[in-house]
Each structure stands twice: as C-alpha cells, then as structure tokens.
Length: 210
Image (cartoon, rainbow, N blue to C red; front, side, top):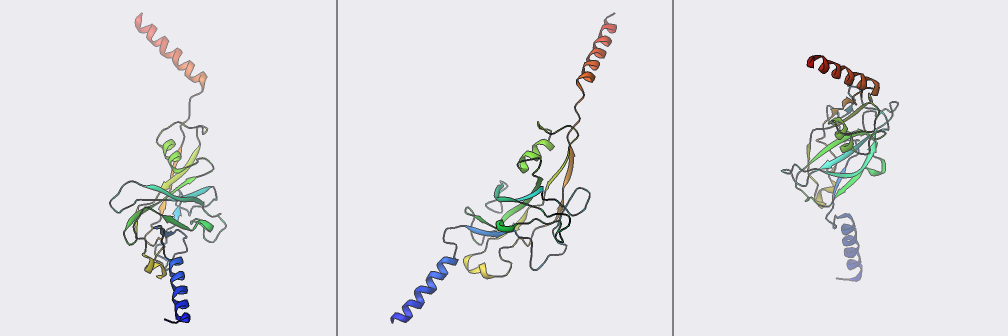
C-alpha cells in the first residue's frame, strides 16, 4: 500500500470513528419537526382541548432501558413550550437540547419513551406536580389551578451506527399527542370557621349529655 492510499484509508477511518457512537451512548432527537409528519400530529393540548401555549410549561422525556421494563428514568433537560403567537403552538422548543443521549440502552433494541409536561412556574419537576395532585403537602395558595400530564409510552429503537444516516432514524415518530389534566388545590377553612365548627360540635355533645 503506497503512502497516498494509506493516507486516504486513515482519513476515512478517522471520520468513521468520529461519527460512530464509540462511547456506547444512543441518540434520540426530540425536536418535533418530524419528517415525515405523522397524522394526526402529536400536539400537546391543555385541559380545555386547545394547543398548549406558554413558555412556563415544560416537557421532559422519560425512558426505560428495555421494552419490558416499567421503570422510567429522566432524560436530558426540560424544554419550554411555545408562546400562543407561535405558528408551532402546541409543541415544545427543544433548541440546543434537541439531541439527547442514553448510555444505558442497546443500539437496535426497542425501549419505551414517555413525554411528561408540567408548569415550571409552579413546580420544579413533574414528580412535584404529581405529588400535589395526589393530595400531598404544598405551598401553593388554596384554590390554585394547575395543569400537568403525561403521554402514552411509545416505542423507540436507537439506531445502530450504520443506521444513523437513515432519515428519521433518531426521531420520535411513534409519539402520540395527549391532553393535560387540570387540578385545583383544596380550599382550607378559615381559622374562625374551624373554631365555630368546634364550638358547635361541643354544644351538640353537651346537649346530648343532658
């Protein structure tokens, strides 16, 4: 092999190595500019059925390490939804966080992925919103209404190194749209009302004793 041929081979090998996922991480592109665009398009809707709008709402992906697993772990950074004036309202703006990597899944093997959405102006995480909706303690004012929700899990197969050049191979083409659910924190009785109630109960018990 002459020097010119050897140089070409080495250059090609270096390019292939740079492109390949040699660190074992698997790629998922959560940008919603899906191609081909599915029908119906997987918009996220608010509790009224309108396309979700507002940068206070954020999306985060959760995934399993195998198709049979039911244990989900968070993937990447939450990203905001778009303003009501955006022509792409109802979708999130992944921006620089469009490409996520997973180091604990296998190339070419299906996993499950789920989209979870919450109001970041009220909660630091999806789990925090879910806990309050389940009746957990909260610092929110009584009567505060909020929305959150999760989509149905969908299958995603991380492509092999050779499949990375296939159009749409890293996109979430199986993702389904869904609607958020609305919750309102319960109203706590005023202290004076609680006191009056206690007096009333005490008087009733006193009369029964007589």
